[in-house]
Length: 101
Image 1 (cartoon, rainbow, N blue to C red):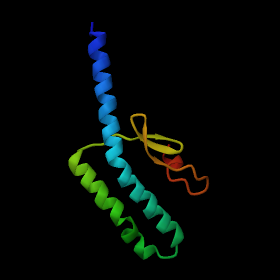
Image 2 (image 1 turned 120 degrees about the horizontal axis):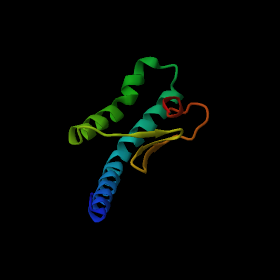
Image 3 (image 1 turned 30 degrees about the vertical axis):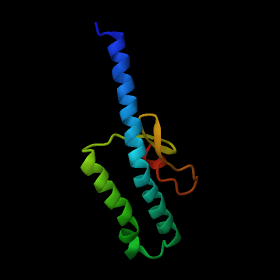
């Protein structure tokens, strides 16, 4: 049987790791928010969508270069790393997260 103290220590270490990763990932997802805002403002300019998303994609590539894999939990209005929210979208009309939930 596993030692409860060791299990608690492992759980605490994982929570701390998730917190650090969430803090590192938030700026990347803030760039996603800004990109989506630009797209919503300039819906007619489809040819520039890639340009609008470029800061997010660059930041995401840098994040994934550091962390080979990131597990995101998806709930109706947020992306989370562990219990830590990294992207929240409570807008009712163009909610990006809800369709993926």
